[in-house]
Length: 417
Image 1 (cartoon, rainbow, N blue to C red):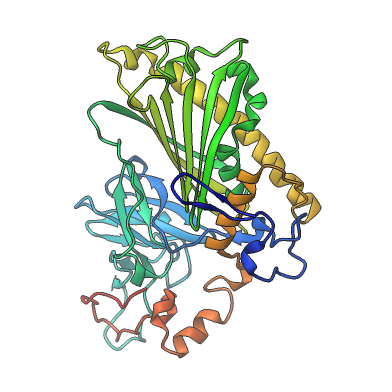
Image 2: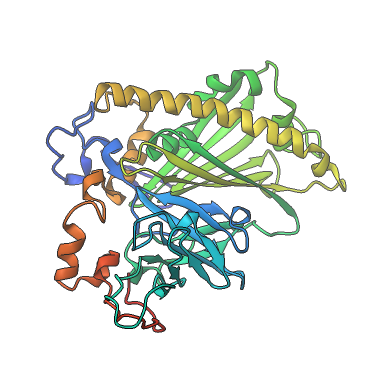
């Protein structure tokens, strides 16, 4: 059974699993491949830090799905992203010292360029044994006040666009940045934002908020839902009213909220009744940190339209932030409880009844990748060594990079990966 939206989009039939055989023993309550065992696809630009956290001349530790990454901002201001381990003794490079354009390991002072090549081993004399290969360098870009890396196939990075955040930097808008760790699989976060039927959870801050699903469309890599929100009474947090443009230029009204999972990110917009533009929009990414992808880092950009009254938004800003932080804290409590239940039960026993959530689960399944166990990650088994023996430099494994004669400084760019 399918549903066709107004734009010709087709809703995937719930329960068909996309025609793929499910993994034996990894099924959810509906007999589909367990979504909580599906990893986030690395072949996208993923945020891994707030730009302000990566200071000039400093190193910063971050991660993507078990891949530990060392960011450092060189004296030129350029941010580089390296595998977070020294090729010598495996000490994290994020503990190192930035000197000019290189990152020097804190232990034996081996120096690395931004391309992952070893530029100096201070105590190595001519005729000594050959130094090991360098470390992996990740494609990295800065945008929207965030640092993005491309943890997948580096050959795909140049042709892959950064996510769009249209209102960021607009003089008519002000942006609030969020960066929070949540102890759950990223899919729980997608479901939480897309399914607005959980407003009872927020009754203490939004009162009796009543959402009505107006329609939804699903495509191969996206799900979009439109809700009509009306306030049915009860105490409403002042920050909630200000965020919806009430009290700084608007009045109590029915609002239309559009939420879109555009794999692998999400966007939300709220348009007050009779308004031409959104009162606010939210772009958010959920980036898994650990190899099992049971913890994710949520990066959010909340962009709010400035009212006609000069300075009004600046005054309202603390109340809006306090409101959004409280809502996020309540959501985090719920999704982390969902994750604990999954951990205790060993599989997903959810009995979902909302077609919209069934659809977004299928989008996440079909665009994701299998989660590799910790032992299969680069450097913990023979996978990388075998790839290097086969000349597979495109794997991104540092062991696939060419060796360098003793004392030679590497000046040419490394191979892809």
